[in-house]
Length: 109
Image (cartoon, rainbow, N blue to C red; front, side, top):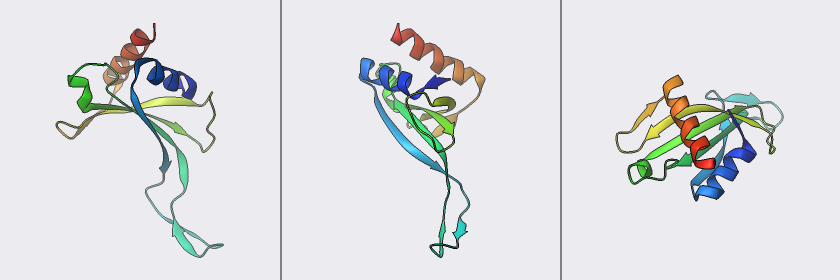
Protein backbone atom coordinates (compact mmCIF):
# COMPACT_ATOMS: atom_id res chain seq x y z
CA UNK A 1 0.00 0.00 0.00
CA UNK A 2 1.32 3.40 -1.00
CA UNK A 3 -0.05 6.93 -0.83
CA UNK A 4 -0.56 9.08 -3.91
CA UNK A 5 2.35 11.26 -2.81
CA UNK A 6 4.71 8.27 -2.52
CA UNK A 7 3.73 6.93 -5.94
CA UNK A 8 4.19 10.31 -7.63
CA UNK A 9 7.55 10.84 -5.91
CA UNK A 10 8.72 7.40 -7.07
CA UNK A 11 7.73 8.17 -10.66
CA UNK A 12 9.38 11.59 -10.69
CA UNK A 13 12.59 10.34 -9.06
CA UNK A 14 12.97 7.35 -11.40
CA UNK A 15 11.57 8.93 -14.58
CA UNK A 16 8.67 6.46 -14.71
CA UNK A 17 5.66 7.22 -16.91
CA UNK A 18 2.37 7.13 -14.99
CA UNK A 19 -1.35 7.64 -15.44
CA UNK A 20 -4.04 8.64 -12.93
CA UNK A 21 -7.50 7.57 -14.10
CA UNK A 22 -10.93 7.58 -12.47
CA UNK A 23 -12.55 4.20 -11.76
CA UNK A 24 -16.24 3.73 -12.58
CA UNK A 25 -18.85 1.06 -11.92
CA UNK A 26 -19.38 -1.53 -14.63
CA UNK A 27 -23.15 -1.09 -14.55
CA UNK A 28 -24.93 2.06 -15.62
CA UNK A 29 -27.51 3.73 -13.40
CA UNK A 30 -30.33 6.03 -14.38
CA UNK A 31 -29.94 9.60 -13.12
CA UNK A 32 -33.42 11.02 -12.64
CA UNK A 33 -32.10 14.59 -12.50
CA UNK A 34 -30.35 14.54 -15.88
CA UNK A 35 -32.61 11.79 -17.28
CA UNK A 36 -29.59 9.89 -18.61
CA UNK A 37 -27.86 6.61 -17.95
CA UNK A 38 -24.43 7.05 -16.37
CA UNK A 39 -21.72 5.27 -14.47
CA UNK A 40 -20.80 6.21 -10.91
CA UNK A 41 -17.19 6.97 -10.02
CA UNK A 42 -16.03 4.61 -7.28
CA UNK A 43 -12.34 5.44 -7.00
CA UNK A 44 -9.07 5.96 -8.84
CA UNK A 45 -6.45 3.93 -10.70
CA UNK A 46 -2.74 4.78 -10.67
CA UNK A 47 -0.70 3.00 -13.34
CA UNK A 48 3.07 2.98 -13.79
CA UNK A 49 4.99 1.76 -16.81
CA UNK A 50 8.37 0.03 -16.36
CA UNK A 51 8.86 0.34 -12.59
CA UNK A 52 11.98 -1.82 -12.81
CA UNK A 53 13.74 0.51 -15.26
CA UNK A 54 14.82 -2.39 -17.51
CA UNK A 55 14.34 -3.02 -21.22
CA UNK A 56 11.95 -5.92 -20.51
CA UNK A 57 10.00 -3.75 -18.05
CA UNK A 58 8.91 -1.43 -20.88
CA UNK A 59 6.18 -3.99 -21.64
CA UNK A 60 4.82 -3.99 -18.07
CA UNK A 61 2.28 -1.77 -16.35
CA UNK A 62 1.67 -1.96 -12.61
CA UNK A 63 -1.73 -0.71 -11.46
CA UNK A 64 -2.84 0.42 -8.02
CA UNK A 65 -6.37 1.42 -7.06
CA UNK A 66 -8.22 3.27 -4.36
CA UNK A 67 -11.80 3.14 -3.19
CA UNK A 68 -13.75 6.37 -2.89
CA UNK A 69 -13.91 9.60 -4.86
CA UNK A 70 -11.68 11.60 -2.52
CA UNK A 71 -8.21 12.16 -3.95
CA UNK A 72 -5.45 13.99 -2.12
CA UNK A 73 -1.76 13.44 -1.39
CA UNK A 74 -2.52 11.03 1.50
CA UNK A 75 -4.99 8.83 -0.38
CA UNK A 76 -3.98 5.17 -0.02
CA UNK A 77 -3.59 3.01 -3.12
CA UNK A 78 -3.72 -0.78 -3.06
CA UNK A 79 -2.15 -3.17 -5.57
CA UNK A 80 -4.51 -4.20 -8.38
CA UNK A 81 -2.46 -5.97 -11.06
CA UNK A 82 0.63 -6.15 -13.23
CA UNK A 83 -0.36 -6.07 -16.88
CA UNK A 84 1.95 -7.41 -19.58
CA UNK A 85 1.48 -5.71 -22.94
CA UNK A 86 3.62 -8.37 -24.64
CA UNK A 87 1.25 -11.25 -23.85
CA UNK A 88 -1.91 -9.27 -23.06
CA UNK A 89 -2.33 -10.86 -19.64
CA UNK A 90 -2.96 -9.59 -16.11
CA UNK A 91 -1.06 -10.96 -13.16
CA UNK A 92 -2.62 -10.58 -9.73
CA UNK A 93 -2.10 -11.93 -6.27
CA UNK A 94 0.11 -11.59 -3.26
CA UNK A 95 3.29 -12.65 -5.09
CA UNK A 96 2.87 -9.91 -7.71
CA UNK A 97 2.04 -7.39 -4.99
CA UNK A 98 5.27 -8.20 -3.12
CA UNK A 99 7.38 -8.04 -6.27
CA UNK A 100 6.04 -4.58 -7.14
CA UNK A 101 6.36 -3.38 -3.54
CA UNK A 102 9.98 -4.58 -3.30
CA UNK A 103 10.91 -3.01 -6.64
CA UNK A 104 9.42 0.36 -5.70
CA UNK A 105 10.94 0.46 -2.20
CA UNK A 106 14.36 -0.68 -3.51
CA UNK A 107 14.44 2.03 -6.19
CA UNK A 108 13.26 4.72 -3.76
CA UNK A 109 16.17 4.09 -1.36
